[in-house]
Length: 224
Length: 190
Image (cartoon, rainbow over all chains, first blue to last red; front, side, top):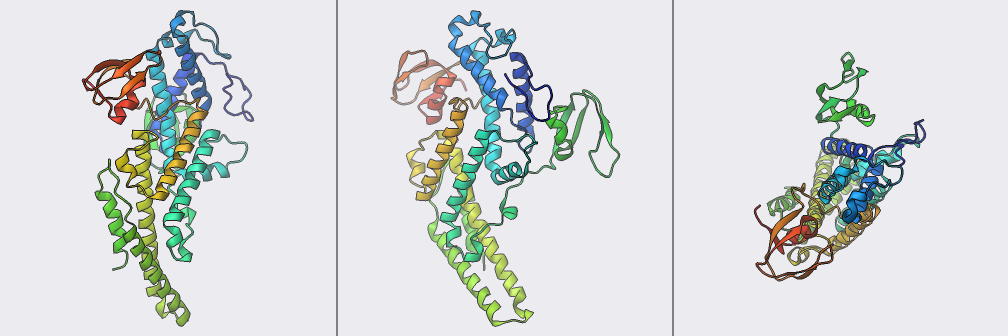
């Protein structure tokens, strides 16, 4: 599986992961996604990969013991613990809840999400997967059309256009979150008025979301 | 007083229980629109007649009232959509009759489009139904009791089960979750 999250900036483009590692990655992303105020980078590859595996495991359930065949470039020695349908049920729950959490956030902050995506240059990683982007765009257009048809059209002409900046639902990026440090990071500027702090592995901190969001994207910390 | 009608729209929605949907109060909405038009006309004539700054406070007041009204109406409509969205996740693509009758024509159109977007999105995930698997699975199969004569249910393994009133079955959660939501089956021991 190609897990290069950023083709342009990343030298080691092809990462090979075991099934267990993919699962671990989803689990972390899922927890992060549930706890963060706004969408994180999409983990579409992980989702696709796990879904494919669930499907294969379900198909092969009758011959589960012989399930040691590689899917794509995955090494599946760790799959033994997945090879019962109950485990696939759990994985499916995690996967669905992960995408569900994201969709709910998209529905809530549709305009904001679309704006964010548009101001990004080609270099940066999109937060939305292509399918999510389509979904967001359709949802936005659909809702806007509905509101126009039901209300705006009946209002005085000067009030028929909505000011985007005012009507947009913006996530509160200053909300406080707990996080655990995964690897040592030095000189983190949490507050511009204070001296930078060093974060060492396994510490747990509470902070505003915005200053530590880049660290979260680099998976140097995780939310707890 | 200005804006009172718009607020009562919002209040009305607030009073509606979460699992129900009242019909759109089109009458009240029309009154709000009429109020807005009147306010807007008043402002327009004030601007045209007076070119000194005496009228500015009253223009400001009316303008705020206009914005307030618009905000309330939009909040009212958007909140209804949020509710309908929630119904989609709870009840599936076909909403119960008692909800549908209270949906306005445009809302039905919105709902159909929403359904389509959601279906397209799920298609991108190999057709995974993301409205299912909403609770963490504790066990693979669960004991359910049938609350109504539903007829035959074909399981993924190809077996056909007759769902008749008060019959009890031991089924995989993934296959009966949607029936529980529809109220055909009841999860026993929960």
